[in-house]
Amino acid sequence: MKRFTSRLRHLLRTSALRLALRYALLQVLLLAVALTALFWVVNRYVNQQISTSLATELAALKSLPAATLATRVAALAEAPGPARGARHYLLLDATNTRQAGDVLAWPAWLPSDGTQRQGELIIIEQDDDAHGDRTSPHDDHEATPLPAVGTTLASGGRLLIAQEPGAAEDLREVALIAAAVVLLLAASLSLTLGLALGWQWLHRIERVNQTAGKIAAGDLTQRMRGDGRGDEFDLLATHLNAMLERIERAVAGMRDVSDNVAHDLRRPLSRLKTRIEVVLHQPRDAATYQRALADTLTDADELMRTFDALLSIARLEAGSETVAREPVDLATLARDMADLYAEEADDSGRTFTLDLADGVATPGSRTLLAQALVNLLDNAFKYSAPGVALGISLHQDASHARLAVIDHGAGIATADFAKMTERFARADSARSQPGSGLGLALVKAIAHAHQGELTLRDTPGGGLTAELVLPLAAMPG
Image (cartoon, rainbow, N blue to C red; front, side, top):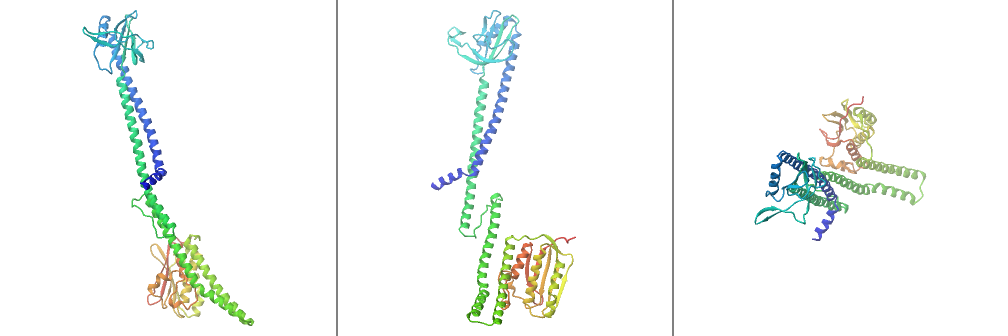
């Protein structure tokens, strides 16, 4: 009960309920205006019908002869009728003496020109006695507001007809009651709908809040649950889950980077520290100091390259480094990079081949793509034996450009393909080689920044093929 009361108080503060109340108020106002207009039209129609009916009867009675008129008016006034909706009459002669009818006197507010007016009339009640029906005035007559019409007769007398407004009053009462019921039902329905929607939205928002609380507490594996309705809550859950997955990957990547940095950078830092301690332990000659400083500079350069690679990867993965979207001619890029390595290939006795399809371009940054290709070529030259053939290939399919660096060396185990593109990952055969294990990770980050992929596969006949799969673009010019 306490939880229900708390949720009810919370519900009363929700935007859904406030919106429902505003909608209910607007609906009630619109219905009130519509029902008022309808009531006015109906009331006007009824009054017009009464006016027409009175005018018609007045004309019919006015056409009767004077002798017949008095008898007819007396009969109409004394005839029994329904308690409501009856008519009242008054016939005066030329001297304003009442000849017949149940109206006590001609009212001052009613002209005798056939125009309908409404005002108070004094009606004479009918009393029954043992001798029959007769009409007699009472001393305490009550004035009743009635619509009436009067005319002047040819004899100089006047004739009045008044209508009991019972039917119009009944219609007005029915219309008012119907309007009140409709307004009450509309307001109740809107309020009920608002409460139901507010309760439902509150339940879903509470579920989001609970999940958000767990995430804030550090559990990044939590995800927003949708109801499968495809509404705005499900859309919000989809976007939040995508954001959470990216945050979880980023946090996991940071954790891995921290662990790997602590592990992989410990060795060069320890080597630096040990070398400096040894040199400072006792006086040395100038040549020893010079060699120690040169080795220290080499290790510092390696550390700087490692940190630069880590920074580039972090910027690319976070999207903070803007990637240009200019078309890059990949064949020209590959030839330029091959020229840089041609001399090294000759010195190591390698066959360095190019298989490039012209007219293949991708949207992106030429600088970043050149860095990716250089990293792949560095790995190929560094981790394959002298004399091993290398090559660059460029082809395209229906929607992608495929730029690959191919070596025919020992290759790596297929099970290690996925691991080799992670930070600080190195194959067992490369542990003795200098490097930080960030080359392929940086290439992967550059590929993703260009909406592409880095794939590793075995080269037919032995070796490793590292391929950049990039989207196509129209050639510049």
